Each structure stands twice: as C-alpha cells, then as structure tokens.
Image 1 (cartoon, rainbow, N blue to C red):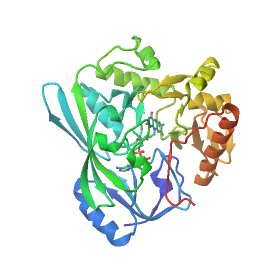
Image 2 (cartoon, protein in one colour):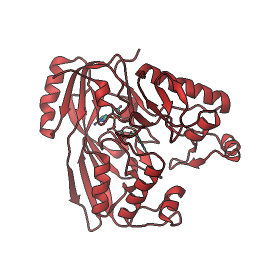
Image 3 (cartoon, rainbow, N blue to C red):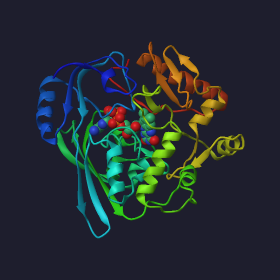
Image 4 (tube, protein in one colour):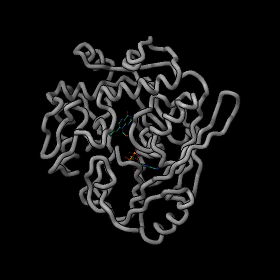
Length: 344
Ligand SMILES: Cc1cc2nc3c(=O)[nH]c(=O)nc-3n(C[C@H](O)[C@H](O)[C@H](O)COP(=O)(O)OP(=O)(O)OC[C@H]3O[C@@H](n4cnc5c(N)ncnc54)[C@H](O)[C@@H]3O)c2cc1C
C-alpha cells in the first residue's frame, strides 16, 4: 500500500499525505482490502470517490485512504416498466445518467452532470433540479466497519434527507459498495424546477423524454458554471460551498420580498438561496477571499483554490463567510463539502 497525498485525490487539490492509499478497481478486491486494512490500521479508512465534495486536511490522514474505482451497471427487469439497476460504487454518476437516458429509464435524469461517483451520491443524498437520490434509491450494499461484515441497507435505513444521510453523520462507519435504484421505463419525471422548464421551453409539470431532460440539465449546468471542467479556470473547486439555508416563514417572506429565491423542498422545508445571501452580504464573483482562495468568476457560491491555498485557509474562509452572512442577514449558512483527514 504506497503513500500518496490527499491533494492528488481531491478536486480542490488540497490536503497532506495519506499514510497508505488503496484503489479498489474490482469488487473481488474488497475482501483482501479489508484484511490488509484490519492488519495495519486501528481505525476505519477514509473512503473517497472523485474527491469533489471534500476538504482534505493539510495534515493528511494517518491511516489508509481507499479510493473506490469499481465500475459496472447491472439491470434486472422487475416487470414490463420497472427495472432495478445495481451500480458499483466507483461508477461515475454522469455515466450512469447517460446510460439511463439511452435506456429511456426515468428517475435520475436531473442528476446528470453532478461530478463524482455513484457510491458517494447517497452520502449527501445528491440532488439537483428538484430530484435527488432518495427518489429512486432501493437499497445499498455496504461494508460495516463496526460490525465487520457486509450488509444490505434498504433506502429507509439510510435516513436520506435534504443533502443529508446517516453516512454523512457517521463518517467512516460504512463503505458503500453498490447502489441499487428502482427506475421506470417511461417519460421523465415531471419537470419541477422553473429554470429547467425554461431550458426545455415547456411548462413546469411536463414530462419530456428522459434523454431530452438529461441534455437540458447538462446544457443548463454548462451555462451556469455547474459542470466540473478539470482544465478550466475553476478546476480546483468542490462545487457550491454552502447548502441552501432552511428559513422560517417570516424570514422567507422578508427575503423573498428583497429578491432572494426561496423554494419549498420535497421535505416541505423552505430554503433560501445560499448564493443570493452570499452576494447580498457583499461577496461577488471573482472576489478574493483569502490567500489563494477566490469566488469563481462565474458564481460567488463556488470558491476556487489557487497557488498559496491551504485546506486550513479554505475551511477558515467558509467560517468567515458564514459569519459575515449571519451578521448581514441573520441566516446561518452550513458548509456543503465534508472535512476528511486529521483536523484539530
Ligand atoms: C462543479 C460541482 C458541481 C456539483 N454539483 C452538485 C449538485 O448539483 N448536487 C449535489 O448534490 N452535489 C453536487 N456537487 C458535490 C459532489 O459532486 C457530490 O456530493 C458527489 O456525490 C460527490 O462524489 P465524489 O465521488 O466526488 O465524493 P467524494 O468527494 O470523494 O466524497 C464525498 C463524501 O462521501 C464519502 N464517500 C465517498 N465515497 C464513498 C463510499 N463509496 N462509501 C462511503 N462513503 C463514501 C467521502 O468519505 C466523503 O465524506 C458538485 C460538486 C462540484 C465540484
């Protein structure tokens, strides 16, 4: 198990040494990996997919980092219209949505263009354009590092909520090995999000073909700077740095009147746009935030790393931005990327 740096495994390209790194390329490698980690470490490994939603510590990780690189999509017909699709954890989510579009399988089309692996997507119940993993997740297979065994977790056991799950709240306990979705051979789910309806030139509630919605989502994400271009000026980023904030009805009324987009999520919670709140508090696209850390030229909510950036500086920048927004608006922003590695 050779050493490596967390920087080389994350899209922010920040983070210190990992004592050992292990890439899992085939499901058949898993048993050997568990044995090797058990003999060497006294803690569960840090597990990464593409490292697109993490801030990895400058101090690195004094144990094993496992990179999930397993690929494979297996479809099992349930009935004339329903298909169970089991996906290996390392399969890029974008490949899965492209495959589903080609197969005319509905339920995950709005997740097109979200960077990262399918195995990481349940961790924060990844979602976009009114759709999220919990809409179609049937079950997961996981390795439980506490019980030292493989388990099947039905979707209900995963406690998937808005950008949240039991995995996010107990990092290290479970490694997701496969994800099974319940998809329907039909037109896409009803378009729920106005910008997507505008992109498709249809009213909200319309059900265009899956491939059309997938293409429209990708076009809309491209226009809004929401695709990860590893060679572009915003290559070193972890996506939106704050989640849209839960607000009370009074706050929603107040900030809507001021121009802030506020929407009701599928859980019934009102949420205010974190990007709008950030800009309202004085942070604009292109602003320098700290040494080596700037708001993207495309959107304030994406912070990009440059020469001189550190993970500590990046995390401090989020604390500072959140505090400034709370002073300006009374609303607390919660960071979206997860801290991994050894943080004080
Ligand atoms: C440009 C850009 C746009 C984005 N847009 C969206 C969006 O629209 N919606 C959205 O929800 N997210 C978005 N994200 C965030 C990110 O893409 C998702 O959270 C994605 O699911 C992360 O996948 P990953 O493989 O990179 O995970 P990583 O960053 O490698 O890991 C994320 C977390 O999951 C854990 N983890 C990873 N794999 C496993 C596994 N197999 N088992 C257990 N734990 C695991 C890690 O330990 C870490 O805590 C965006 C990010 C970027 C850079």
